[in-house]
Amino acid sequence: MSKTIFEVVAKFGKKVRLTEGKCDHVCKSHPEVTGEIGKMKETLVSPQMIRRSLYDEKVWLFYRFFEDTPVTEKYLMVAARILNDEGFVVTSYFTDKVKMGEENWRER
Image 1 (cartoon, one colour):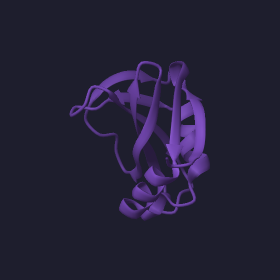
Image 2 (cartoon, rainbow, N blue to C red):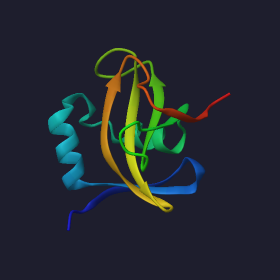
Image 3 (tube, helix red, strand yellow):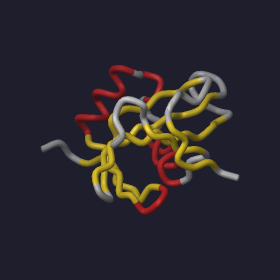
Image 4 (cartoon, one colour):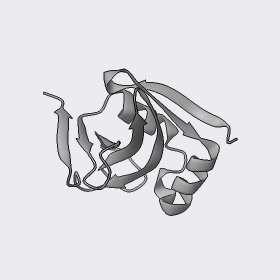
């Protein structure tokens, strides 16, 4: 069993965790998020937008814009697979624009 790096209560009261195994996988695929655990947590807890994945209705895409990142100013996207009221991070990366998907919620 992989050790939990963090567990937060994300927007809408959903518990989301990141395990060491998943963190290693994410950082191999997207090295720019290495060391950005604080920003991942902030994005889950206080997103500016949440979308539902087009490919998997159980995957929620949390977005937050950051001016200061390892790759200039970008959105951080944290994808979490949520079953009932808990879930786990499946991937995370910085991006120029919000991806397709059904918008669930947006900060006003």
